[in-house]
Length: 87
Image 1 (cartoon, helix red, strand yellow):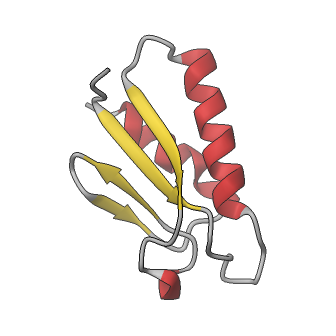
Image 2: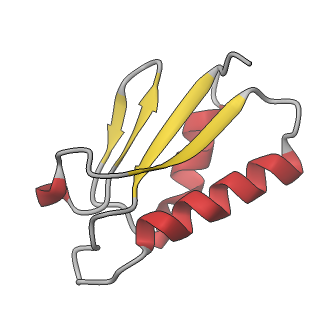
């Protein structure tokens, strides 16, 4: 299957306040939401190891545009979701 967009979320980094598992929670929540509410969209959300931007806190990158998101918190779920759904 070819995907329209593919989001990689770092699950290695900790949040700016030292909070752990932010990346994993974002990835799991977003993947579940998209699967349930947008099953026909060709979108993919993956866990990723280090993306090399650890100084920017939890981060993600969306392809094919190569758009980066840094300093992510649990409150950024809708931002990431919108990036995937925008055409």
